[in-house]
Length: 564
Ligand code: HEC
View 1 (cartoon, helix red, strand yellow):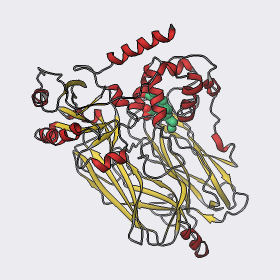
View 2 (view 1 turned 60 degrees about the vertical axis):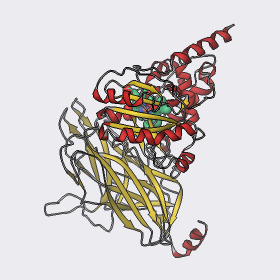
View 3 (view 1 turned 45 degrees about the horizontal axis):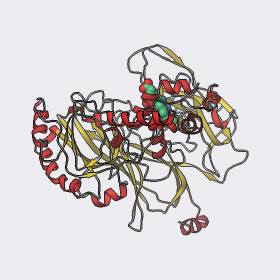
């Protein structure tokens, strides 16, 4: 009896959720087949967004593309047009879609939510209200509907019968998904590290009631790929700190939320995370804790970069295997970059670190969300007896005056490790980003002059950063895409850690391309009307890549190169 009732409910809710004209279209973010990333609400400056539902096995849906493309293009900048595909994977789509820009709905969440059950159907979204203005046939009704929407007039025929093929989605039954056995473990694996007391998330997943209370917001951040925060293309490279969530896990979470987040039977596994996260995390108590001299932060305004100095308090050389900064006040501390070396004793730069120093190096910086880790196996950083550590602290004001007392914890090797870890910096101080431009790119290029093993890649730009890509051009003429970050977000300064260190022969050229969005469509952009050049502050820009690596001895080189 109970079963049949819930079945009836499901059928009703499925038909009720078939999105009709004038209903709201939820925001979403999807990759395209070439690795670009697009989210619907970015197109708020358009008069209309047009979507053609594609299924590669359906002639009608592929045939419609050319006509719609021509129609949409006739409106120039006013209309944004995409094909959307919920039935094939990215590689298949890339192989057979030609020029069309196809949104890959790999988790089928957009398809299900908007009821895209007919390949060949066209949808017109009105960005003024984020409502559906039209759905139906590609020729019969679309031109009139689009003309009306662009003109800001009501659409007389907002629904027509699309010609095409049915798309059938496998049934899901969110009511049968167990919170205890399925949902809580997915959250524990993908979210709780930040969403727990003492974590960086703004709310803690301490039990079912919290999760249920935030479930609609969870749905939204999953649909828009805002959470978990991971901005790289999952098909390029393998990263040991990959925070992205799997397609099945997202489907499961959203089905469960759409079924009303049922509690069901069983204990609540999340209550074990209600306690405060330990200060020093998984690395434990450090061998040395250094207090960074405190900084007073005003309630408002721009705080210049703060430079703080501490001389190695041990008075002896140590080999460092790991280090981590524990922020004092996370609401204002944006990031920290830590270097060490010798201080200038005179001149205008007195007190600052010398630009070149025989005892120079770096320790861990701070960015939100980064897990502290040991340096790669067999490697370390020598912190010499007389070195001075420089902390470059970047603060953003939060509306309340505060004092930041951050600390750095340092972990030592017992003996000298085999290899020293190095960083290759890719920067280009000559960048010039034109005002009011949605996409502008520049490059920084460098070559390894020795055989190396590469461990990690960091792209870095500021508020206007939009996307980043790293490509290796090998001396044998071949190329490889190492990292694609199509959805760069300044708030998450992620260092991408390679799952397996990568051998690169001497002569390998690294090309780092960065894109900026200096338009008013970029909500982080403080001023789209300015040409932007290189500068330290976030309202200026940078292209600043860092690749960590170690050199390979000639004896080692052959075996490593051979094993590639
Ligand atoms: C690496 C840390 C981290 C992980 C992992 C993470 N979050 Fe978050 N989450 C944050 C931070 C920080 C914010 C606030 C800033 C922001 O929204 O970007 C946030 C915001 C949110 C919000 C929005 C709250 C609001 O007020 O807008 C929701 C909902 C959320 N997270 C859900 C999740 C879910 C669900 C997962 C797992 C699938 C997850 N998060 C994984 C750090 C994280």
